[in-house]
Length: 310
Ligand SMILES: [Zn+2]
Image (tube, rainbow, N blue to C red; front, side, top):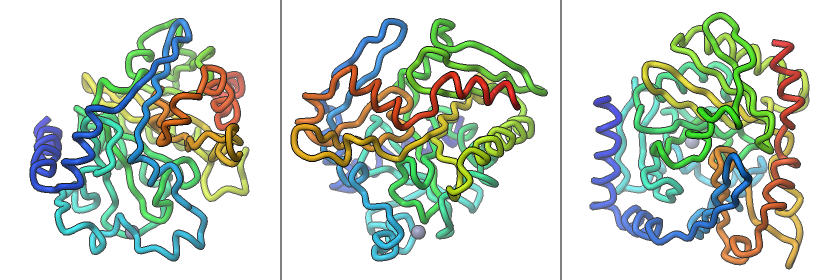
């Protein structure tokens, strides 16, 4: 689509004219990756030192109030340019990339990070940016600006979940509601609800039902903890919803040898774990990945129960 092309051109232009973007996109080409094989699927581990800004971000109310919001237009670096989307969002190049092409998409107003009421916009963005995977990190699930509504987008072909979705050893269709196909991932370490449909209204309706179910499980949270990926292809949306139970795993708060600085968000849920420290990249094991998913995600069986109750 035309809009997707414009966004990709913006990335190339910003790399040419903005030193920080040039430097970080160049380093990304040399980034180290290791792969854990779990049989029917794999998890990549990416050692990405620039991401320490996000992984170790302080997101408590006091720290957030004390800093100028880096997603508000008035605080953007002078070199940063953007593409307007429906006078509601601005598409920006993420200067601290994980993906070879990585966008940050803040709302034009400084309003809290919430998905309810904004999921339809996420679908519109995914359809317009159809070379990209759109993602949403909840205010306590990886968003480093919980006070400013935003999405991100990474170029397609990077996250293992994109291809695992069509592997029936990983993902199985379990229900249809209206025009939405609902799938479940029985043995993928993390519980996921996947939706597929070409009908936006039905998807929003189905998402709202899921949201309400999750909300009854986490009544003390400002919104149920979750990460979401949205992909648009062949005229249909594919949505992956990851219900979360914890923001950061116990390893994050340990000291010395036992510590792992890893703050799971949509990208990790999609199958690429980001380790900003080299020592963590080296020592993280297959068992650690399993243990982290167990701590921070709802388990597959609980997710299946939830799907049956919809
Ligand atoms: Zn802001």
